[in-house]
Image (cartoon, rainbow, N blue to C red; front, top):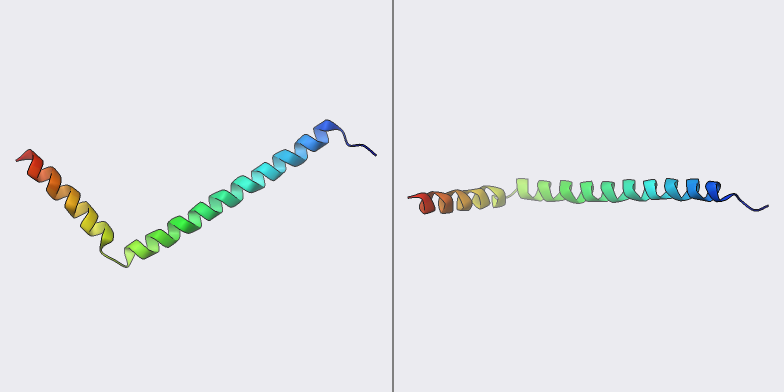
Length: 60
C-alpha cells in the first residue's frame, strides 16, 4: 500500500528533530569536556588577565 505524502512528511520532520537533538547533545558534550579541561588549568585565567592588561595599557 502506498503511503500518503503527509505521512512521509511527518516521518521526515521527526527524523530532523531527532538529528537536531543529537547535534545539540554532541555540542553540549564537547563544551562540557572543554570546560572541564579549562577548569583544571589556568588557561582561562591567563587569557582574561592578558586581555585585561592589554586594555589597561591601551587606556594609560
